[in-house]
Length: 409
Image (cartoon, rainbow, N blue to C red; front, top):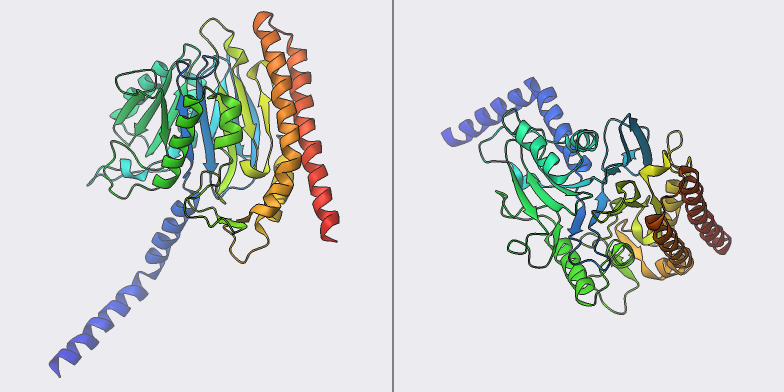
């Protein structure tokens, strides 16, 4: 009897506590779910120029986020100008970008960089990357920035990948008060010449390692590209960013669950930066931007030298190109009760048309860059070419959408 009374008393105390602090508990729960939904999960990688086909460093990010409406923005800070992926209309943060000095940066969330016992702070990665694009010209400049903020602290737990116009290509596994640097160009540390990161750190404090399947798949694809001497921006865009392979996939199935694939149901955009050689103009560092889920989108080239981005990439409230890609994605995922299942039959229909356009954009851009590297073009020429490539991607996407709509009638 006493035991039953004790249970009743404990229950009453618990209910009183919940009623008294219900708003505090609700706030904590809301913050928890927000932090989970806003996490920049992402799959990322970089390669030193010593292993790429053309000798130029590469930097790549598949952005996984709950923010579907992504845009491009051009920032002019006088001597510093840069282009970056942003959440629609939010220029306070940048999620991947490159400046006119050839410095490019991106990130992937890594919560295991939280030190046990530390009052860890999170989610300032976008602010930090924008600041880095304003302040930094080289990988070393970024390390100085991290050194300066080690003592006071940063509200980040993330991997930051950076490349520069001097051939630098490094990852920084970063916490509130410490960081660890990994250089792809250091043969003793990185024999492969490339580095991959998902959402766990080599120097982290956690044990689970979120994103290990994505990490391994991306690593294998980079390794394959290197072994067959094809590792360059077009290989990464065509073979890595849009990959939906799973070892467990049944060959007879026309659906793939994109939970652990490189291209995921949460992938909202992608950035591939092709750097420059030390003797080239850093303004020719190319930002290959995919403003949608890579498997159902087209990647287009951009340069800070142009002095801006086409309005179709940066409009009011949303990017028209991003919206079309979202519609193609909705079609690819719509034939299932599971929103994470992509229909590979529908995917083939979309990619058959978009791939033709992607190959044309690759070829024409290669021809232009070969010309521009010998004789620096006028800004007007860069603007016009950039606009033509964006319009080509947009028209191809609208054409696919129209075919899909007419086919569904």
